[in-house]
Image (cartoon, rainbow, N blue to C red; front, top):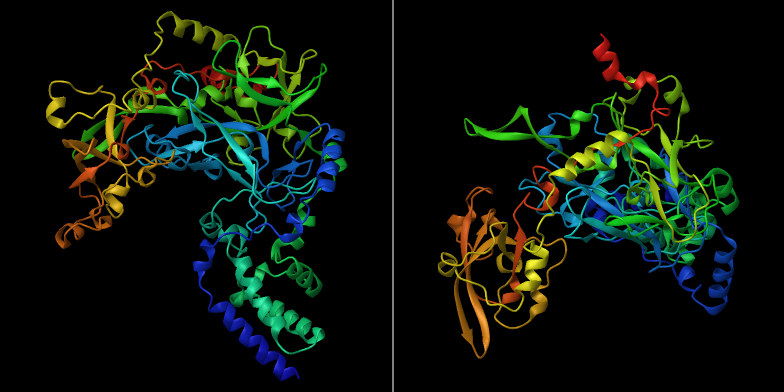
Length: 619
């Protein structure tokens, strides 16, 4: 019998090790039938009553994943389609590594989203654009077996001005049932974990659970009694060590009984849900409520933060951990020049700063920048008559090490991990729906007044998002016509990627050319405009940087280097396949005189030992 067990175990292991990593791109398991069965009137009523009894829907607390720091928890049940929070801002960070050679450690490295995925195309002509979304996104962890929320692309506001990000309302939506007290998990991507295998080990990837389930189902189909199934399962666990360790086998539950329970609902990761759920009472005692703030149209400027409920005086409205930059020079943008065929930065010619500066805290006697991440805090505007103040976080050691404040120096911030946090506290009673304000400080106020003296409200009527609406039904001008009647100089014409990478078909199937927020297309120009049966069509010339991706390219073109520009001609192109985009760095937020200044930390809060500019001047 022992030999038979070993043979069966070996066969099963062969199945596992012959499975390729291609499974990592498969979808996460769908919500289980157990959770779908909860869709009934009785559970709806129970859920409604539970929500009424809970004072707070969202909590920031220590993650259930060991070593993962903080996490976000829902105090109420959530189902697919529900929204979580109120939508975050996303701040473009451009050419960070180019302007700062070998920026290490970069405290934001593990918190960036791909700029293109967030609809950021025109911030810079290079590929180095990242999206820093300092709300829920920075605190939601990832468990590839229990992904339960998804991130949407933020909305774009062409009228945001030069001092705030135009990207806002990046919402979080539930994709899998979350029990009351459950931690939220977003998909970081399999590659995020593969590239950090030395840190996390061979954790299961998004497709590992599906493969593991197939293996276990094959095991249960073997003609043996349950005790033998369990014995084989135990042997597999023992083999899954050292050089034989497998991500798929790591997706197995630890006990055979848990395997059987998970197989009943066809959801192998479900056994882990209790491990990643905290009691609501525990969250109240050990976490911080973070849903006291919602964004909205400000009374004074753009968007603002508003109270979701009545907040008595001294209420801790929210707590925000702080990313830190010991040297604020990291935010500088330098002039560039072409030297000996290469672009170089001129370190003595600073032409601006990253927009992120406006969302960070600093002090005029220090190089330290502290950038808060938390739900809604980056919507809070400035007022000389504030109703909110900041303080160092109290009784929340999961987010704040107060020894850094009392004893630490600038050297204490060399590691990229956040070590300190702010509480946002109500100065007085704040009514539901009232806008929240903090005092940005004297130096910020003076800088703003100086900026306003010469400030001219930018003309946003010619920005691409508005211009596309203006000319949506207007025939496009050809290259020849534009010689006498050019389009605005801040715009570029771009054509849908289907014209380059897809099969070209003539017809009015406009669904083929639906532009997603993440679509940027390819640079193109109109060579000819003609009309057939009352419909206007175009012949266009489109630039393609990677000729190898074009199905219609000749063999000679296909063998060109990837960075070769190829001009392709396409005809019978509908108007819907062509749009205008802003030329990189022509929007108001990237104007040479755009406002940039950190929010001042009150003098009585900022430790003397952090004031390295004073120490440098004294020495």
